[in-house]
Image (tube, rainbow, N blue to C red; front, side, top):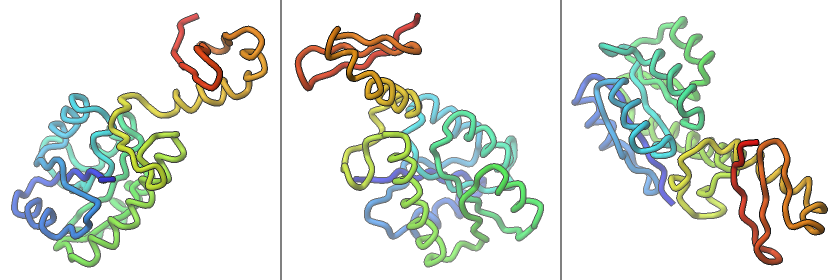
Length: 196
């Protein structure tokens, strides 16, 4: 099961260096760019589950790293963010923590520090997948990328269907808070979003 990493840094040599320093067999760099806006377009085109971890430089032209992370939290809250910076500036770290950044790596990036940080981030990705009922956790071994929408809707559907399981046994259909569960045969189910 692979984990997908994106590198967003305005310096091409640093992106290339980081790409070569990643030594995790289960992780691959699927995208790198020098522009935060380009990364947001990539996510919109390929789906919010096309990247698990974003390594983000703080100081970039057009959109700085903190602005990008703020936008990521709105668009794709399941992406785990790690800051890359040449500055050990406390206000940046404080702001990054407010945005939910999981780690702060100083440049020049040390191979061991990078891989240790990524190991911790992979654990966090598994936690997010399990919390969101997304396939692809290390226990299930399937890619999460086939789901294009937020996992909270799927979670709500399962909670609703479970809560009203006694009703569908009698009627074959349950409607509640916009969700419908249709039973085709015993043990099989289809959950669909219904506008009521």
